[in-house]
Amino acid sequence: MKLRQPHAACLEQASRLMTAPLRPMAQRQQTLRRAARLSTRTSCARPWASVCSRASQNVRSYATVSAADLLFGQPVYETHPHILKAGELTPGITAQEYYDRRVALAAALPADSAAILRASDVKYRSGAVFFPFRQESDFFYLTGFNEPDAVAVIRKTGPDPGDCVFSLLVRPKDPRAEQWNGPWSGVDAARDVFNADEAHDIGQIDTLLPKLLRGVRTVYANSEVDVTPSASAVLTTARAKPVKTLIEDGGVGRVHNLAPVVAQQRAIKSMAEIANMRQAGRLSGRALTDAMRQAWTREKDLAAFLDYRFHHDGGDGIAYVPVVAGGSRGMLIHYVLNNASLNEGETVLVDAGGEYGTYIADITRTWPVSGRFTAAQRDLYEAVLRVQRSSVSLCRAAGGLSLDQIHRITTDGLRKELGKIGFDFGYGIGSDPLSTLFPHHVGHYVGLDVHDTPSIPRHIPLQVGHCVTVEPGIYVPDDTRWPKHFRGLAVRIEDSICVGEDDPHILTTEAVKEIVDIEALRDV
Ligand SMILES: [Mn+2]
Image (tube, rainbow, N blue to C red):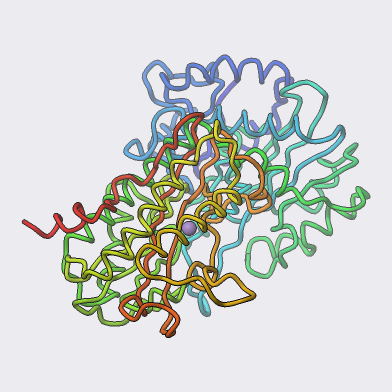
């Protein structure tokens, strides 16, 4: 079998080759599994290494053109060896793992069904000014393909593991359009790099989708199929109907929500995902600790420093709009204006995390602007920290606790610790007075999204591979019922944790949190 040639100059040749029949699925998948084992030794992002003519030279090539000379819509090993290892489609995640995820999804779906995922659109900030592209998380999780204007179809074709067909509909290469918009990967790369069994021009979706859905009785789709196609120039001109309408026109009846099905998979992280979460935590934690070393006078400068540091050293940038809140602004849970002055004698509460390979870290630290805690700040901080440490230690599968149970234990711990430093909970009939001071939940699942897999309830026992946050916070309003010296103080301490069998694996340990460690950072 000859290789296809995605380079613009070879499009004609490519279109001829594309009419060549594909090998039977079973044979291809067998080869795929065998070859994927080799993929860490060769350069083949496409796992079936037998088609890589120069695999032994560690160079994937398309006929006469080395892949390193081509332009893709996202990093691939040949063009970005500083970002990806051989065999990886996205940082830390191999082509084999993406394939395994699709196989696992198909296994979870009923007979004669298909999953249809539409990629995110480019989102616009104002007028023609767009935000950096962010792929829809389930689409990313199942394909590793990081472009808009794409639809993935995963059909279950039989009862056995691996009985599935992956089709990817993408923008075809278009040198003139790419001159303006930057490169995209094209139809051939969808097959040769992203391992689609079938790859097509997204512009043909109107006629292709009914064919792809022949024999399918149940469709599960991601939320993006509902989106009106106005945001995407390519898709608006290429098709008149939303993807959901095209699916329904195929006579499959009600379209089911795919998110809860994929969430079951995404909730338990693989070793590779945990390594990415750890890297995100490591990069982010170091950035937070380095921020604590400096005497900041403005929230904005501190936010800009973190933004830079999250991009630095292999990071993908900020995972969410950070909270950089001086003094009592820390009581506003989602304060993101980040534009006030920081005053000596006050604390600053920073809730900020970076991404690595699209996996996020979620961290909060609170520290004194001057580098030294006052007596009241110290007392309140120690109380929260003691409870936080204790709640982190509960994130182990052997303990059998759920996030909701850990929340209740945290609440009890905070009540006890605050009682010791003069908070009086003895009056106030009705609502729990502690819920005024600690108004949010102790944690949530984290992963590709900050609030990851929201359909997974917080009342289920934590399992090995769950990644969660533990983030108790105390926010003391200016109310005479609370000790005067604590009023206006806000302390939240948050780490991202991976649940182990007997121990929590703290992903964000580089962000220091002990008082002695924080104060020592300014001692030099
Ligand atoms: Mn959080």
